[in-house]
Image (tube, rainbow, N blue to C red):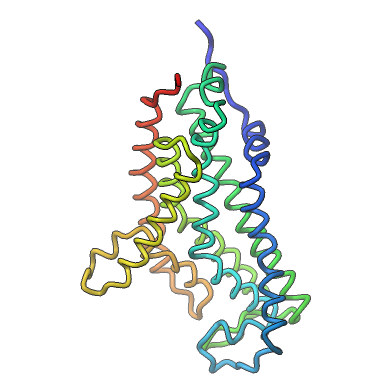
Amino acid sequence: MSRPVRLPFRVELARQLSQRRVRIALGVLAVLPVVVRIALLVGGGASSGGSGTTDLTALAQVSGATFAAFVLVLTGGFLATLVAALLFGDLIAGEASRSTLKYLLTVPVPRLRLLAVKAQVAAVLLVAGLAALTAVSLLVGVLSYGAGGIQVPGGPALGLGDSVLRLLAATAAAAAGLLWAAALGTLLTVVSDSPLAAAGGVVLMSILSRILDQIPALGKVRLLLPTHFSTAFRGFLEAPVDLAPVANGLLSGLVWAVVLGTLAAWRFTRKDVSG
């Protein structure tokens, strides 16, 4: 009887980075700050907004760290969900569409180990992409508007050191807010043989959830929606820091991840890959 083979993390990392859609998704995150800077440059001069301004958009050009916070807020919702959908939607469905899944499982690699390693690599790539977004945003912002801290809308101007720590925390919280998307993408990539269909399912759920979240008549039911706490990471960009939405968002993401992740594992162990 053949002994199970452990799929190395670095091998799976190379496999995922070899996919064009993965490189494009990560590239968009890295290049977006430059695009936003060009858009602001074309749109007009530096903002004259001060501490009394309550709109972060109006303060985007006040300082380098404020620009980075603006880009993160701009990206941390739908675009970040789309990137997560592309990364996790390709895990198994991508192998199936390339007719490599059945050969990969005959190595033999245990199915749950294969799924776990693929999900771990996708998670690392997603976090790396968001970290690159924040780092490039801060670099572009400092070069364009100076090494100033975040100007909190309607609040004080923070120091640069404090601002960097807040940006790191907000980036981590934004990544945690995508747990539901990662778990749903993992489930759909197991169910579907089309990576685009799996990614599309995550995007469709995101749109539907955001629409339902705008209906006050649903009351507390909205707390169960996966995107209800999608903006919780902004709590780190306020003064004082509001950790309640962050904690609620993390708990919601973990619940969705456990439920959908368990379903994905159960379904993958029973998936017919002989075709």
